Length: 223
Image (cartoon, rainbow, N blue to C red; front, side):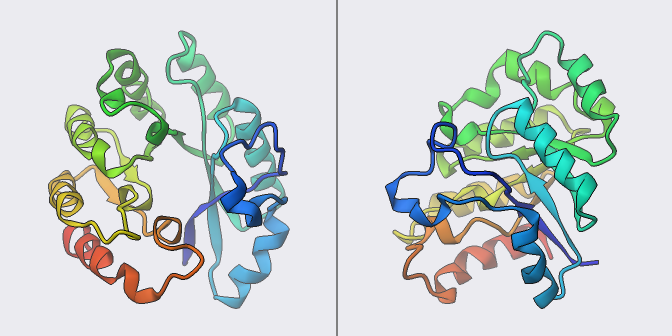
């Protein structure tokens, strides 16, 4: 089975989706599984995983509802407040739904050492009990903290989103490459090939823009 490992679905709301600025006008619309289905079929991809874009339990519930209605949505990486004192109860609640597969926090919007915070790591420590993955969404300058995090929790499965968003448009690669190769040595981390177009010149990108970055990831993580 071939799966698209990273899809966002939403009913666009300008008051909620403030991260969609004027340079992303194409995203100011609803995007639902019915829009994706013909594209998956045309490319012989049998399903997808839905991933959170809004840090709210409401969106997590929305994505789980979509998964229950569309058979090709195979699972959900949702958002749960990792700082919640009742986190285990919230995880128990969501894990009643078999489509709930993992958790993500938008760390790219946080300070460099956010993942080293004790209260954040207390939340991460609770995920493995529920057999949940954790998606790491960061920029290259946060890779050092990601390496420390995954080494702190060797039993927890982590997924690196979007190659850690290397600066493809400006062709910066050396420091990112060095950190990626270190991170890939951790056996509890996998890497999604996703999100590259937005880090390139997203209106005028070429497939060759991605070659050097993909070579690093394939050599480091395997295929």
